[in-house]
Image (cartoon, rainbow, N blue to C red; front, side):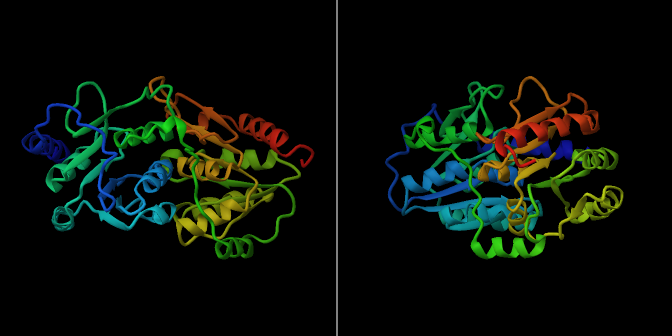
Length: 354
């Protein structure tokens, strides 16, 4: 009930504050060199990772601009993936005093452009834009939505990868994404790499990294993971888990001794550096999918609840196998399917090493 009231109030507020525009304006390619640009990306870690190419290209086009990014409590740890292209990180919190303070800060900055990077309409993003009063706003839209001064038609969600859909925001600045390099990236320093090597030890052969889950709704299940590990031979296997899944990981390694547990990472960067030490990855979590794509590491990914109206968030232009089910539970996908997919990727990318 409270959630519905909150949504109704937001819609009412947006209707009052919606900019009165007569349609899309001209290109933003002639912004001043010192333009102030804010990116709204206050959702999940994976959403930040797929936005890196767009931010990289925007920075190259406006090397002297102030480019800030607004992240949320759940994905602020991903700032390292865009830090080299951004001036500041701002934090969105759902606490009212924090929101009011944020809005005052946004208004005081007088942004020239605010870019809503969300792929789906977000009342939060639109409220922030309306209350921040930028000179221009950019966002993906469907149909005849005229909220933004520069509305960008959303490419077909059934056939266009999320990386390419997000990159369409660049067209507001006179840039053509189809001619740009949209490769993902996640830098690992030599110090971080050395720390990961110390944590995991030297490789004993081909190394498979298994990310057991990012949340219970994406958990394949203890029995499935045990079945998988026990079917794999002549390969080093390391299991990764968040703090919530540490007990699960320990129970799995007890019953599937071919897999050992990686140390619990203290940060996303530490976690990523250890994943980087693996040759091939298996995951039900899309944030790991995008890390794999950034390094072009072969990856087997599980997807549940698939529909025909949305293209999967697969590893972008990177070797992978996507195993899917229309069921809500990933356990509908069998361990033999995963074993087969792993063997195929190994044969294709590491011939003669198995």
